[in-house]
Image 1 (cartoon, rainbow, N blue to C red):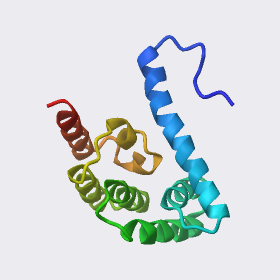
Image 2 (image 1 turned 60 degrees about the horizontal axis):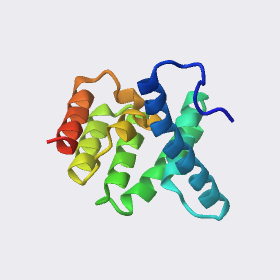
Image 3 (image 1 turned 135 degrees about the vertical axis):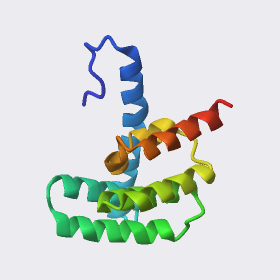
Length: 144
């Protein structure tokens, strides 16, 4: 499995891809293991929903989003779960709710611009000025 393009001369781009890709693959693998053990894994359910949406399997995507939302809401004080709820809302097309959940995630301690920017569930927010404002607020918290 090739993770990065060895021909790339843009070190910053390679670093950004690597920083996102490794945790993303780890979360996916962890989620698959949880699923096989019969556990509800919110990351696995959410990323499964993203993939189902990409494939146009809307009914199955809705079911996966509903299941992910239930798991994330079980502990809504953790930034990880709040970011997950933002992803669920973004995948449903509810950008206002997604931005509100994402703001709460940042307030609860979310400190990684890369995790936010590169989360495939949050892609519907890209290009929205409010999304960029949230990223800027995280940058300011990390580098006061």
